Image 1 (cartoon, one colour):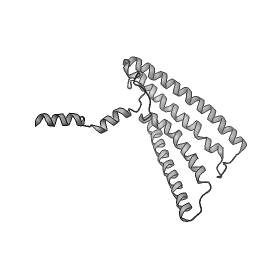
Image 2: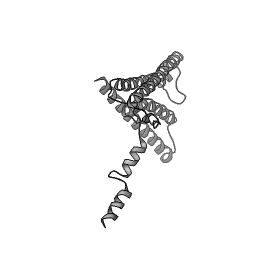
Image 3: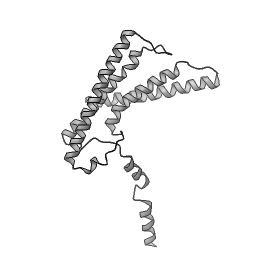
Image 4: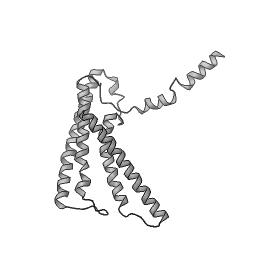
Length: 188
């Protein structure tokens, strides 16, 4: 239940951030080249939105298994060893997330105390930096889910994107072109 709510929240916010970045950039380009003016704060806000997108995307990438990694060596080991390696990776990721949560919270607190605004836009910097502890907390949550699936045997290791396999599957969904050509030649 909680996972479904977090997933919907992540997907909605990622879509909203992408739409806002695209719209703001489009409006600014039109204003610059059509009306010879522009929004002085648009680039800064777009950078903030992009940072938020990245930090929300970290946890969503763990959820859908889209992070790229090199696991060719890990796949050579038996499932039991892959599980241990997966738990080590999850533990390291949660440790990293913890550092981001603590450091991010200190950054938010410091900027809240100073009441600093961004350089070009009337946005408080503490609000901009709030994504660090929030994004890291979501990342830790997703990593804990992966760890639980490994412990309960529902997953062998840390799932990563397999771009090589996806590329091969796209090129030859029903076998390779060479296999099909050889088959056609043997029939004739």
